[in-house]
Image 1 (tube, rainbow, N blue to C red):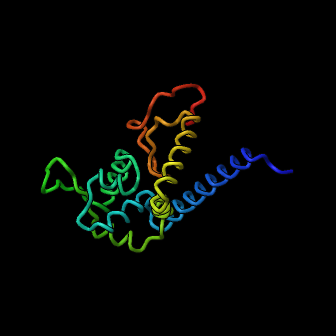
Image 2 (image 1 turned 90 degrees about the vertical axis):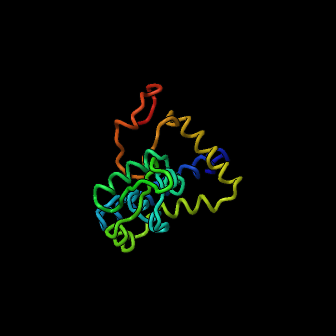
Image 3 (image 1 turned 135 degrees about the vertical axis):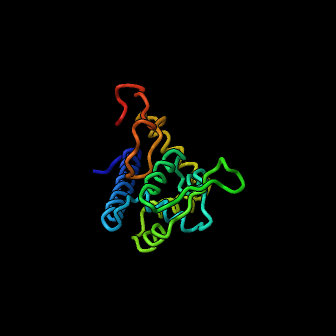
Length: 175
């Protein structure tokens, strides 16, 4: 039996989401198992390694395509483990610059690749029209699931429920 086109497209979309979630989950478990840090933390270390002079939280959020509060939580965990430092910017003392420590540099250099890196590269490689279509379609899906207003942590990174918690909009909201 053959599926109707709308059903087939729905199947293909859900199958693609499953594959992405699986790849991201496997990558996160591998990173955690080999390095003791989450895939999200390793991703941030890799982004910082590409910019030895450091990056602000907003710049990190931009380069990881993540909300700044999520990146800030990851940086806080990395700083607590001695992998990064936060220093006031010489140009603007209100702005913090995040840099790798020698320990963070060694870890990121010897760690396995993480799927987030490839995902960001893949999205950036799409034409502007395809990125817009992808964003529109995924936003419509998150709207349908009533989760569009949530701030999402980085992939497979524990979130601080006190900063990200929002009241449910209705009883069908996913948790």
